[in-house]
Amino acid sequence: LVGPVVGTPDVANKRFTLLGQTVQIGANTIFDNSSIPALASINDISTGNVLEVHGVLNVTTNAYDATRIERKSGALQYKIRGAVKSLDAAAGTFKIGSETISYPVGMNLPTGFGNDQIVRVKLQTAQVNNAWVATRIKSGVSSMGDRSEAELKGTVNDFNETAKTFTVSGISVDASKASIFPTSLGNGTFVEVEGPMVNNTLVARKVTLEDSLSSGAGEFEFHGRIEQLAGDHTNFVVHSVKVTVVTGANATVFARGATQANLVNGMCVEVKTNAAMNATYIKSDNDCAP
Image 1: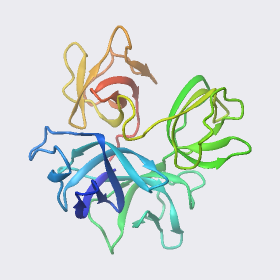
Image 2: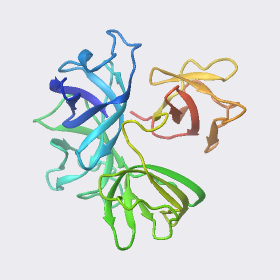
Image 3: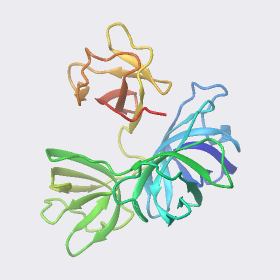
Image 4: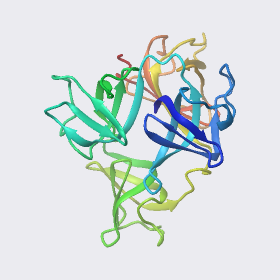
């Protein structure tokens, strides 16, 4: 999420509202304290602050469990991800959460655009007639493709106890043959699923429960253009965050034509990192257009 804080943050319960979405802060939420003014805790968040929030949507609480929060006071556009609701194709409007979004006639829309579809939307920074104006609408569901090994983390939705099927972040999971399957699994539980991807379905070998607010090292994803690339290509900046390329053990994985050698300033990339901002995955991307 990228957008302005609305209303007064609830310091006691460590939550605030951004673009109509509730953001929940946990014990392991990371704050980017390099900004001016400093951002070290919820006490430094005020009404109107523009923030970028990384997190996981908890379908039980209907809030984003934040993993990382940083200031974005100079943002030229806002971003929101969620399920389409109250679509009015004639008026060119829909809602994500409590926020109304409008889109112009002729905009390129995701295939099958309709209610309940998960989308990623880029917005103008000023409302028009009490609606946020979309500049781009894309599918918000990851397309992983067939592969022998995949790993997925997130909250369970559409759980079918009999068939042992469910979705995580819009991706279908078939756990009917999983060797490890928690008996307490259900909608809203946070899980890690491992197994191969076959025909857009993750065929789970193992499903384990995790705590979304306290699990592991933290994982972050950035889409943007490379800046301040080091001469030896060992680090660069994307969205004001310095990212380190890892070699040797646990080396950064490159994909879609990207290699450490061909990184250049201005290159559009998707970068995944751990909490230390060490890159785990870098691929060439096409999502940097305004």
